[in-house]
Amino acid sequence: MNKFTGTDYFNIESLLNEEEILVRDTVREFVSEQIIPVIEEYNRNGEFPIHLVGKMAELNLFGGTLPAKYGCAEMNNVAYGLVMQELERGDSGIRSFVSVQSALVMYPIFQFGSDEQKDYWLPFLAKGERIGCFGLTEPDYGSNPGGMITKAEKINGGYILNGAKMWITNGTIADVAVVWAKLDGIVNGFLVEKGSKGFTAPEMKGKHSLRASVTSELIFEDVFVPEKNRLPNTSGLKSALMCLNQARYGIAWGVVGAMMACYDSALNYAKSRIQFSKPIAAYQITQEKLVHILTEITKAQLLNLQLGRLKDAGKLMHTQVSMAKRNNCEKALEAARIAREILGANGILDEYPVMRHSANLESVKTYEGTHEMHTLIIGEDITGYSAFE
Ligand code: TGC
Ligand code: FAD
Image: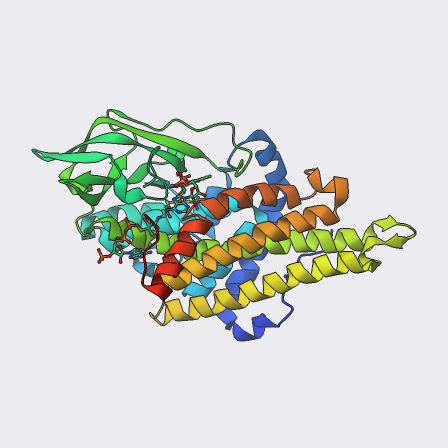
């Protein structure tokens, strides 16, 4: 097989610095050598390739933008985005793992935790010696997490937690769950440790999407959470939403990797598949499809780069993250479906990555805020009218 060299029609590489290119190429090689050869089997078996955690930790991919004093790479946001892009070329489930560990577990501990919590948890999480998950969604509260019913009650020395979360990436394999619950009606963040009495995290089975990722329920029945495990600097739902911005940012970049994989597969296939005595790449309709995918990749890459530069400059608005997440997920799913068409019947086989990416992107378009939620977030920003209710 040819070495993957990226999809870069507009020479966007010329806008990257040396460190960003180095990070991208290192992860690209890792994905080609360590993820792509095994991912179809894990996907088929519905298992997360847990052996990759240590390898990704060696590459310092967890909590990539956080300070070196916690063992993190302290890279800029563009480099972090490129990590997400390359990982998702392998599989959305692997990018999800790193997203959750970095943006939804290490970030809230860093942002809202005490010094003791940061000093204790961040180095373990950076080394992949502890795995985390993020529990916001509930069975009856998905797009509207502010309605959550999971609650904490203050008692001597800590809190008693009751409720349930659903659709939680990494839940069953996590050592620590960042859990959002109402305390006196106000959303607070808590660190719930594996093995706490009354806490269970059964895996959800039967997924057609993100099969190489663990998705779980989190159930809390009178779980005691010690005072030291409340994130002291959270302030209502806004704190949870701040974490989502970090994860949505990574998704906007990640799905470009999935698009690249689909484009690469469709282009190579179209050049070699002969019908009516010619490669199907020689037909205008196939060319239009390939051009459409490539154009959407290029637009998404440019959107992401500016998003990253704004984030690095501290000027990013969460509505801009919504626009990139919304657009790029929609276009990635569309690209995967078109790529599948180009491969004809072969497109449904796991000999090619296209159908796996297409199925994964159904989840990616839904989680971290559905397409509709991001439409309404941007709609409210530009019109001044909230259309959620
Ligand atoms: P609302 O009244 O609009 O907002 C409450 C306060 O928060 C502020 N705010 C934000 N702040 C920072 N970042 C954001 N993205 C923010 N969005 C809102 C807002 O200004 C307000 O501040 P203040 O100072 O006035 O109090 O809250 P609402 O209850 O009306 O909800 C708004 C809505 C619908 C946009 C929000 O709930 C939402 O985003 N819903 C979508 C839910 C979602 O995305 N869930 C994701 C769960 S985690 C996940 O899916 C992980 S996937 C993992 C993987 O990669 O595998
Ligand atoms: P609902 O909110 O029930 O929405 C159903 C449909 O109604 C959607 O199309 C939605 O856009 C539409 N809709 C809802 N309200 C409106 C409205 N006001 N106007 C117009 N349309 C509306 N959550 C976590 O907390 N942590 C995780 O780690 C996590 N990982 C996940 C992993 C996977 C594989 C998946 C699939 C989900 C994960 N989620 C996680 C949950 C995810 O964030 C939610 O699925 C998502 O926020 C949508 O919620 P819902 O599925 O309950 O859909």
